[in-house]
Image (cartoon, rainbow, N blue to C red):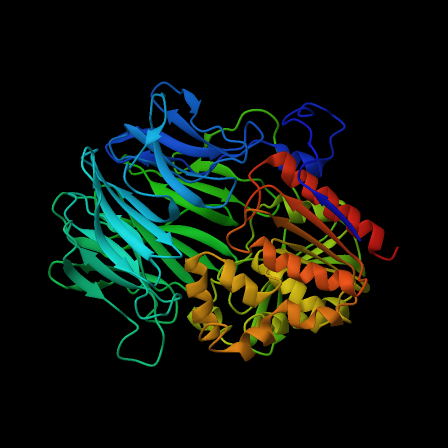
Length: 611
């Protein structure tokens, strides 16, 4: 066994940016990229985006009138959580410590200047959402702590913040109406963290309206806030619901109670946001690992497709001139911010990322229905190949036909990559997403096992060279899979995993405790047999494959103590394993650190996989 930590100084960012000998896989990590720019509602030429141009992901201000771009934040471990005020005057950003997600909001003038505490009087916490008022003086701030649960505060400049909501269960700020008189929140007071209900409050905390789809039926249904209409005095709230077995939008007038069902004839999950004049909706449609955009006209009920290339739109926004900007990529083509006006909106500086190979679709019959898997392999290669099963996190997330440096790097080194949208994944309907309750982890692994069997039987994968890997929930499934399916995998690589579920529950942030209570049907004390059955620590003595684990020492989601418990059990039996600890939270925002971690993973695979 070997251990290392993040104290080894990686090379300085950009040191080899122009080095022609740099391999393509490293260029994909290093190439500057940008997020979809957010823009100020009342100053649309002012935008905020995230970029890794310096080698660390930070916030940037962009004045579209002058073209000037300015780096806003500069922290050793990066910053991605930022909000631009509707008047364009302020940039709010969340200041935590080395990725532990526990901190306070600070703000900085758009033009630059010193940072200041955004809401004096609020102690540090986990963030539970933020909504900023158009008056430039008002903010609704959500906080979560282990001691207090969730509290929501109304903050006005120059005044003490006022608490307007408190509950032990998880909740979050949804949106603030255009005129600042209505506040929409999502809450789980009913105890089901996967299916929130909605409440609309006045600024004094009194209730205006409620919407709860968990009542009056046996089927668990969730709701989400998509945003108030961007029109003065308009009381319409755009809401996501699951009443037809998938996510769809509807319009809810919180003053009258009227609900307008859009009844969009689109398979898969559908989301929406308002066009700036309130006349229509920008529809995002996600289905079978790909996505597309539409405009829905609220006057004519007409649905018009917005042309985008085949692949994944990971974010989109409608601009005041009626155009739409969107962040698009495919497995073969790197991401770019595009516009319906034509061309690329925001071009990152410096080195361009090489492309990769396209993804292929596979549908495999599994114990709970057809499973969708995405396959990439070296161009022209024929199997059986050493194969990486790269398992996504979440668990309520999904792999898509989008660009990712990690899978592309494995392909460059001769591996096939298989990504599985197991039960629990989004984009395949509510029943598929909700199926993993109570037999947590075990259900997902049944689907992964079915795809593994297909990959071997089809001739794609070499059964003697199979790597199970993933991060977060994917890391958890990796360790659980190595213990419950010990003869199926040649080695495992787990990043920021759940390893000892009982200890993880007690150490994790409160919002994740609530999710775990929903998934398992109670606490470890209330349903010990379920936590035991789903914990990798239960099966650690059955692990045969070499194991590599990486962990952030400040991680509030998959805390370090429970990983150390698992590692000690591996040590006690002399199992082959390696551990890498780094000084950050649930992943790193530093490009050099990400490259270092992939090198360590690749080296581990090359040393332990049969030739």
